[in-house]
Length: 228
Length: 261
View 1: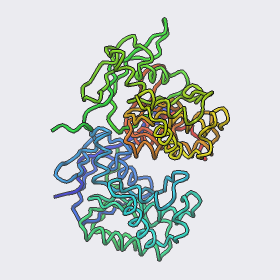
View 2: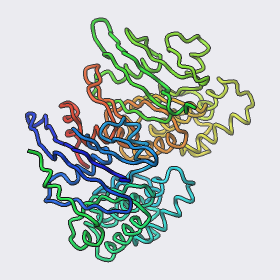
View 3: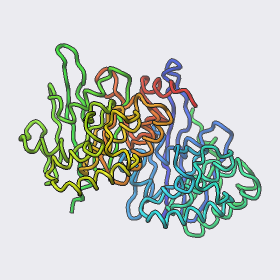
View 4: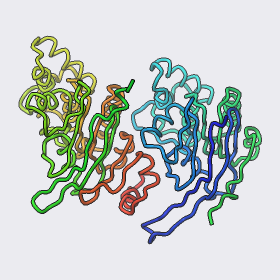
């Protein structure tokens, strides 16, 4: 009963502005993730880890193979799904913490987080958001302020709250602990462990050895899927 | 049972438009679903505004069809609509937000009357109720109550644009066309307007076709993007996919031409 299954996934970029330069990224990526399991993607910078996460989320196109995501009783192939299906599947089944927060001007931090719960009442969503932000040591007085002016570490914690508030079967994490101090890193590791206990499948890119050892059940070396 | 959300609200099929020998739109087909926001991007002269006018029945296509699902659930070819149905669309079920608010507002009458007029056109007669509704909409677009009796000529550009949006939304439309709604505004005013549009679109579950040359606007507001060049659609798809992983040479050029702030 996998939550996510990648079958022969292939990706390359063609850079038309560089005279049609073809950049192969990965070829023949195969792995599956079960409920409650955390899979870490490993390998040197530039080997395609983030590209794989973005393909699973659907913000990068997939050139070949299948990316099967279980959304309750149906299975969606993100590699070939229509834009509308990708959007519905994300809303129901996939949470994603990107490397950097893309903040909207004028929206308060608490709402940046609360807005990820579009099926919950506003007050309830805000209560959940506030509780999570508090756990991530974002002071109360900052919650009413848009995160645009926050430090890198603060923005990353807001980003983490955004990804962790909605409870979806699949959680994608791109360097969630990179810009955090040790105290906040420990909080994130606890949050991931809680997600796993509740049966969420996690795919994470984590460079930090200690953090990776703390959360990962399995490690896949993405360099082994290097495209020829 | 078929859910209304699973059926397209608007359908363009093989739309083309020539101005004499000049081809402005070439063979454009797509579907828009309830609550979905599509951004049409591309540089000036790509045919974006022509497309918007074809979709909103302000221009007659040289070839192809636009079909719209009326409130009775039936798809109608816009070309086949009777006068009453067409008027219903323009006055009630659709909104059209112009880049220049002066085109979408009546500049010589008060803000309240600008909003109330759309209600009177659909049969509202009670003055107090019309004024209350207008007031409610001015609140929603963040225009101070004491400005309700002023004409839009006394408003700033950003306020005029917000008033135009209120005028369009007061009749509870299902589909709104927007032509560069943030064009010509200061950046700080743009941010406020964009945030307002984003909130209203989500709250009211509006379907929107928005023409913009600003990719940041497209990213913030839209679910899907259509990239136009020389009258044709050269690339389309999920907004973050088109912007983060553009495939066509022209789209790669557009995306790479943005100066990071």
